[in-house]
Every structure is written in structure tokens, then in C-alpha cells.
Image 1 (tube, rainbow, N blue to C red):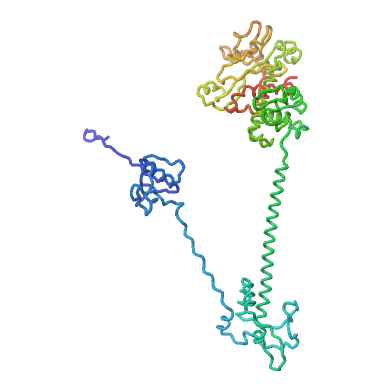
Image 2: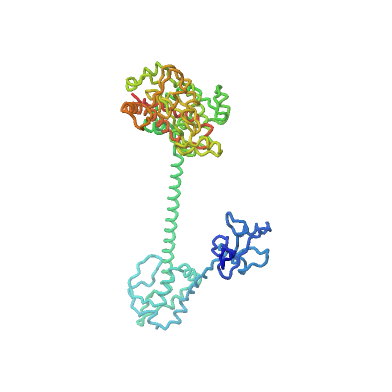
Length: 555
């Protein structure tokens, strides 16, 4: 919009965006001279399908803005509506240089005839060989005495050529069947009438061909021998690797039962004796567990008839479940270690976690008043002798649910993440005495105490120790006291007495934080996937109960 002479002029501008070719490995755009760009045939599905097949692009943008440049059509131009692009970077044939012409082999006789050398240069000077025997047998291995032989250019060329074509010369020589009369023509006799034997060119050629042929064959045999030897060595190494793989033993509890550090690392138990004590507590039901129904079958014969036989022993199945809880190992990793399939690991874990949850639920972990007083530490006995339980809330991270309502329920403003919250209670000695179910991360501490059923376990005269965030004075049963650090007054400061009380409570309440840290040492609780939402309560409860097998937090 422009203002000219107090009049408003509206100017319409149209911005034309450049088009780019959608063909892979093509960078042409609409600014390239000599190219035209064409839309995809959207109105013709059959033709469009052919275009897309020819273009070979994944996730091709099929819309009215997609363009193909004319460089991909035959002749660099689109001819008609039915024309299909067929020229691409992967269809162009690469030019290959023709092989070099080999120089033809020259015949020795022709070369010698065309040569301008004299007879003396070819045959050498005549020497007296009266001391030589009448005949020389080359194949008998007789040492030939040293005598001068002048070798001309033709003979040198013949010797070099024999290295590559010794077999050919030998075969030609055999085919020609040179008789003794032909060989005698090259024998030169001395003027004094003494008959002597001169090494002829044919003899030298034949013997050199035989020597060279034997050398070439020997080199070929040695090369082939080295190649075969390397293949045998490689196969032997591969066989050794196969034997090593076959000899790899599966991971079992028997391999680490003598090392308490490894037992604690993989299972969380202080020693193998603690693990055996827990396993013996489970009773004979471990033998008749059925993975198909995830229930305990009382009849052992009936349990064996259901499903396939178990690959692992009950103790090693318990060991696999503990490894999954303590290390948080993926099922595929455990399948590789124990040499079972991944579905087998999943069935074992789900069956055992439900079985452990049922068995541990039978144990009354909430102690009576007399038991708490009997094991009351001195630090509590002197300051807060009526303490029955120390409570606090803990949260575990979970994968964000797909349901928007579930996302809202599980989102924790304190953690800024989707979490599940549980209420944990410990005795003054540090043993886990109360474990609630898991609730959404946005639940308040007060509502968590009400929903968990914790208040039903309290008796008159009990004292509960908690953090200052637990404002539950109004919901406690009659005769039950709450011991929390004092709140800030109007001045925003604590008095000397209040600071002393806060330090005393904090020094004793810290044990519940240490207890929750023990639970979090089971790495499977670091991040709960959505696929485990049906068993998350069982997993958390079992991990919390297993911490009671550790030494007491407070002596």
C-alpha cells in the first residue's frame, strides 16, 4: 500500500518461489537455463505410480508443488502427457577405457634373419674344445665346463621371452621334432680337422625353457601352497571360535555363590546364605509354578503336564528375577546371559514377581508395640520412646502414559515428570514396616496417608515421626501424636528451642531416607516402562521387602 498525492494506491505483489527437482541426486532448480519443470500426474493414478517407481525416492512428496525437471526425460525434453522420466544418475552408463593392445611376439628366426649382425657376432669366435667329450648330455646333470659363448641380441630376447612362454617354446620344439641332422648343421668344425662339440642355440633354448618352466611351476606350487595354508589357518581359527561359542556356559547362580560381593551386586542379598534363606521360605511351590497360567498348581504331575518343561532350575529362575530387579537388565540381555529366549525371560519374570508378591504379602511386616520397644535404638529411647513408625513419601519415574488423563494424574510438580508415589514406613531400627500401593504422582501427602490405609494400623499412645509437609494432625486417630519439625512463625525465624527440636528430628528421620535409597538401589525402579504398568505394584512391593534382608540401618 502506497501513498501518492494523498491517495492510497494498493499494489499487489506476487512472490514466486523457485522450484526444485524432487529426484534424488538432482540439484536442479527453476533458475537453471534450458530446463523446464513438470508437475506429477496427480490426475492419472496409474501414470503417477510409474513416475514414483522410476524416481526411486522414499517418502516422495506427492502434491501439486512437487516438480521433476526435464533433464530426466529422454532427449532432455518431455514429449506428451504420457511421457515418463527415465534418465537418472543411477541409469547413466559409465564409460570404460578399452584395454591396451599387447605387443605381438616376434619370431626369433625372423629377427635373426633381419638382423645386420655378422656371423661371428651370432655364433661367436671359434674356440678349441678338444678337451671336451664328444657328446654332452644336458638331462644327465653333468657339469658343463666353462667356455666362452657370445650371446647376441636375438638370443637375449629369446631368453627373456622364455620366462613367460617357456612352455610354448618347449611344445613348439617338441612338435617340430628336430632331428639330429638339423642340429648338426649348427656344429662348427675346426680347420685342423679335430671334431669337437659346440653348444648350439637350439640346445640352449631347450635347456633354458626346461629350467624356466620348472622354476615357474615350482613358484606356482609354492604360491598355491601358501594360499591353501592360509585358508586352512583361517578355517582352523573359525573352528576354534565356534568351539569357544559352543563352550560358553550359561550364566547360573552356581558361578557366583562363593563370592558375596557378586551375589550382592546381582541380587541385592548380602550373601548367598541370605538368598538361600529367602528361597527356602518360598517353600515347595517353586517347583510347581506354571508359566502358562501364572498360577501355582498344587498337583505336581498336573503342573508338569501343562506347557513345556522348564529350562532353568527354580533357584536359577529366582536368580534371573533378582537380576532383573537389581540390575534393571533388559529381557534380551538376560536371554543372552542365561541362553534362553526373550519370551521365556518375560514369562519367568512375570510369574515369579507375582508369586513373590503373594508370598511376601503373607508376612506381617507391621510389628506390634512390644516388638518395636524391644528393638528400640538408644537414640530413640532417650528422646522419642513412643515412636512407632517414621513415614515419608517416595516417587518412582515412569514412562509418560499415552492417555491424557493418566498423564495428568501421574505428573508430579515436585519432580516435573510423570511419577508414581508410595508411602513408606520404617520402625525406629530401620526395618520396612509399611508399604502402600503406588498412586499418581500429583497426589498430596495428606491424601496419600488417607488412601493408603496407614491410619488403620495405629494404636492409642503411638507417635508418628514425619516431615513438616505431612499436615495430618486432624486425621490421626485419637491418642496418636505427630512429631514433625516446627513450622516457621510470623517472623520467619525459629527460636533456639525450635532449632534444637528440628535438628533432633532431622537426625532421626534421616533413616527413612536411607531406607528409600535402599529400595531405589533396585535399578528396575529407575524408570518404569508402560509395558509394566500391570505389575508395577508387585515390583515395588517385592523390592521394598527384599531390603529387610540387609543389615539394620540403626544399631
